[in-house]
Image (cartoon, rainbow, N blue to C red; front, top):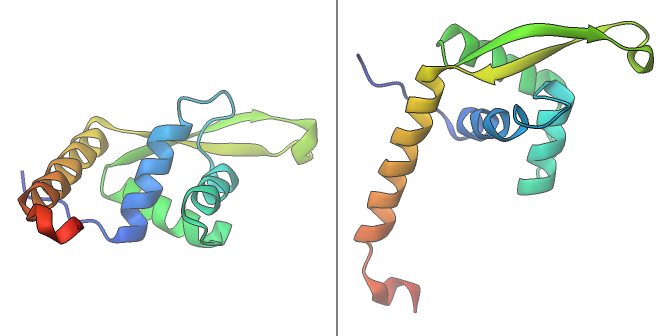
Length: 111
């Protein structure tokens, strides 16, 4: 299997999906944008989040399904996203790679 490379924003969106899919409301565009704003302080458009989500879906890292219709959304359904096994694997690889870099830095660097 060839290595999947992610940009910073793709990685952040993938991490947000991993966090939010465990929540009762699920991982969908607005909840992901809100999570990113809360954790990074960066405002992101829901459209930008959706562009990345569809790109991650094309890469096989997330999958989606339509949730139930709600009155609060005028009867519209949410597209809910969740990690695939490949998405979980990529996140594990990214974590290991970053940790290896941080652990290789000399202690003096942090003083």
